[in-house]
Image (tube, rainbow, N blue to C red; front, side):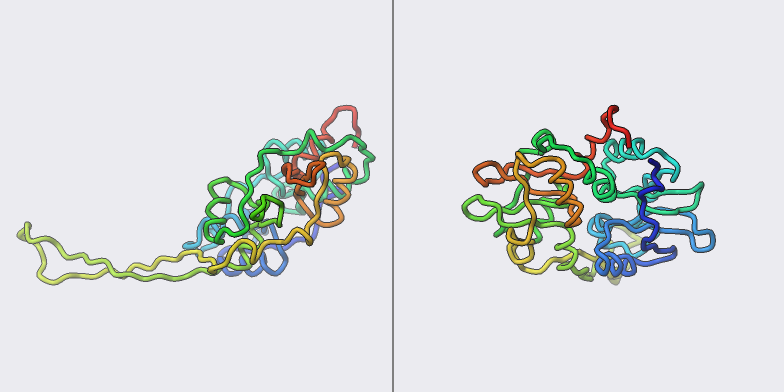
Length: 284
């Protein structure tokens, strides 16, 4: 099986010159995790942009500066196992697929889950792939603090717990993007020189500085998170097959994992689950 056999051939794209607003509009409208950025006259891939770049750089408007100029790419005739290894090694959930230098599609972990793993009848439990010791957040935390915690922890999804320590929901960059807005702040800085120098000018010059900040509303995590009743969960004894089916059906890239007492044990991520396909005994 080759990459081109399962890749997505329809995708949103942007061109340079372009703006932050154009990327933000597409991300919000289509719930995108990545957008290829192309050169207009040649359709050549120049880079990619994701919600992470927009959140980390609220002061930047130019798409050419915002974008990741070194995206992970793969040729369409590459064996799918090689592609899976590239994904798991680099931790990139979406890879741009090329035919020579031209972009022809996107390969995502979700496609691998849905079109390959979910069709395999793996009866082994998911427990070896579960990440325990998962960072979680109290659902009464202010959104701005939640964003800070996610940024310094380098995670895009975080489980939320209530006052009793029970799972109450899931918060992701998707919810934060929907709530965020870029605020423009201006302040004056005096450029007047001191009297210690003969060349000091007599009047103070003023520099007007414009700064843009990503601002979230004065809400708590519980106000915007996806609540427990709306999310899918799995048990530590669930099979790989069942977990992959649930991820494929509900378009999920991670699931909270509960123990036998229905307490949060950890998280399982699709990018870890697909490692089972790298077993040399399995032919794809």
